[in-house]
Image (cartoon, rainbow, N blue to C red):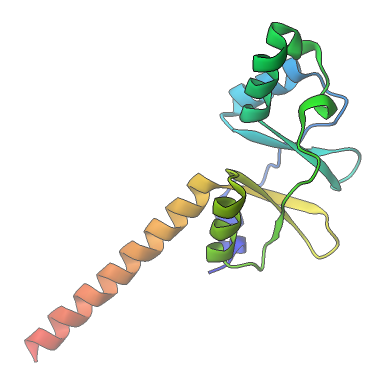
Length: 147
């Protein structure tokens, strides 16, 4: 199974922000949309960073409430780890685990942002696959026991 399968199940709307947006604005976007991170794109779909709730909390720990007046570029992670929609879900899960990240932007062959997946998305997909495998195995046991 590939990352494409997860993207297919998600909303087609891709929410992003710009590096010049204020943290206060982005915090509201994160909260309103119940999401944990935003890809940062400056014009088009070329990703230049990612800003997560964690980044904002770290900024608050350093600078207090003044952080809300900062710009996204001041807190965002600039070296963004990405995957492609053709990557396996297992590979995406390994990237997230090794890099200690919860959100993974998905890019096309030209490096253009096409989506973002979360650890929750990956876990849900893996659980669904495990359930299907369990059901298939149970069915085989029932059929073979009936013979």
